[in-house]
Length: 258
Image (cartoon, rainbow, N blue to C red; front, side, top):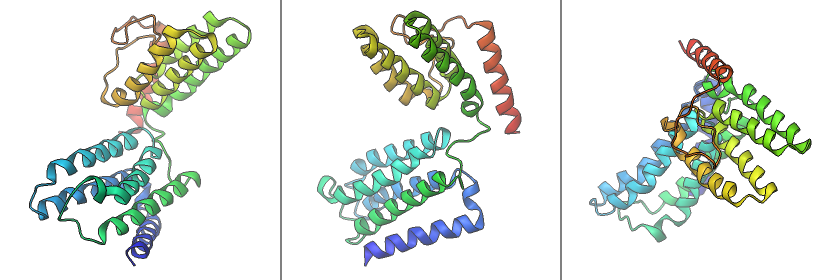
């Protein structure tokens, strides 16, 4: 019964919020994720508090995922909801929390997975935008795309050095956006793999992790070209044309949000 209630309630809430227009605000499902993640901590308090420390750690991870998803792409929130459902599946085996009702893991499992699937449908059907088109990330994407296309063309013309130069320019343009930052470092990693460049491969693996975990907090060195040949923490002078492109994207994003 708990499984059926979870599915029915998730679909009911999803349909109701869609009809009411609540999901026009991209914050809806990130907030749902945060609320869902908080319940186990609440149950820990109800059970006497002994499991609170163990519950706070996974709850905090899902809160971070919700915030990152809201600031980048709601596909992260889809993954967080489904991931929380998978945690429900094994929760009792990894955390002893006497405050959790016997029916809760089953209910929460199906609610989370159904809510995640419903959000995925909203995104695929374009009823909800995965990313905020008024944000800097969306504004800068076309410029990053142009540099990545130039890199592809140069590499096809057997000019690996020129290709990497365009990847560096793409990095400077996109490093303030988590999505674009990770995307460029993945392209640099593939460049290194194709050339068998061990230094670049190792450097880019670390930079992909850093871009995914730190960009959203603004922890990026301005103008850094992103290759393994430079320190990942070193600010660098920015070419005037790239600085102008970035300033224009930031100004458009600011004006769109006023």
